[in-house]
Length: 476
Image (cartoon, rainbow, N blue to C red; front, side):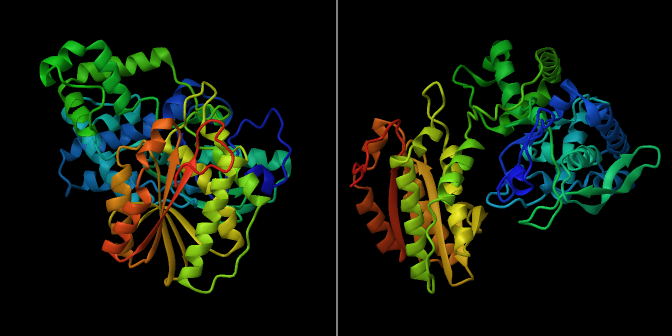
């Protein structure tokens, strides 16, 4: 359910905020560069506030000289403990809106990144997200968490304005880290009237659509692309002629540390170019529209089943997945997996579409669904459960994925064995003709893997090609 649906809001031109899905995080992030590029209303002064906060932290890190036992380092870590702002319903929390959070992990990564900058002779960062280029462990989610944490009070006031304009029911909430006061050198506690998420009983915060992206404007991969285009001779000299645009983050971080002048040129180029928010209407990555479309269809085609055992849960999940297959192949669901230029969307869009069908079914049947659940051997795509005894795992992949066969032969059986779960489904999406050829003999392989692993794995393949034939039997 969307925020606007739950609170029965008729949107107007004033409502430029992102309308979040209340029971599933959307993989978009609050980009500090877009704040820098276009402040308005409650967000005027945001960039100065963020820079001011990190200037203060920068001085503490510099005085600590990298000594993790020093008073300054410990104080910096304490101030940097910015918890995930799950109230935005953004990020990587999967089927819910509570991710793994940030806290101490984010603080330590930020501190390391800032210390690396200090060691290069940098005494302030105009764009704190540059720390991504100094520290491997910092990604889009960490940057978004930190940004939201620092301007939480602005997000709260922005949300309050929406509450007042639409006469939305709200509850007074107290934030211990509402805003940072540089004069008092501490976080300030404040209260706000905020709407409540009916699925989590936690407050909700709204954010302008114009501040959201799938990745921060300034990010390591974009920095590498900039260098690859503008300083190719330097890259070839250091890495040889075999180097490509696709390298791991460690390579990028090490290169950036050796060439601070290139990082500076890159940041200046971004300031000249400006940034663009994510296009939610076109939704090229499939983060939002596939979920909404599938969810709407699923709500009108729900199956309600009696589930009393593990095998019955398995059969129920199998039936729901067949519902999804029918939706994609015969009810035009495939359209949500293709861009307007006839290029296929990425694997995340297929998983979002699947979530849109499965979550309403699970809610109607009292089944817990967790997306990208970490089970100790890595994150499995979907985990379904009713208590401990009744559990099912699903691994969902595009047939074109380079790890497609590994997903069936290795990943899924290992996940099942690690959790002592007997039943799993390997869900496959075929988008182009060559994808179908990869599936030859897949049911036989699944049977062999099942027998060898002592589990039961079923394969469900979905024809996601543009205008697929009705009642496709291409996978038998």
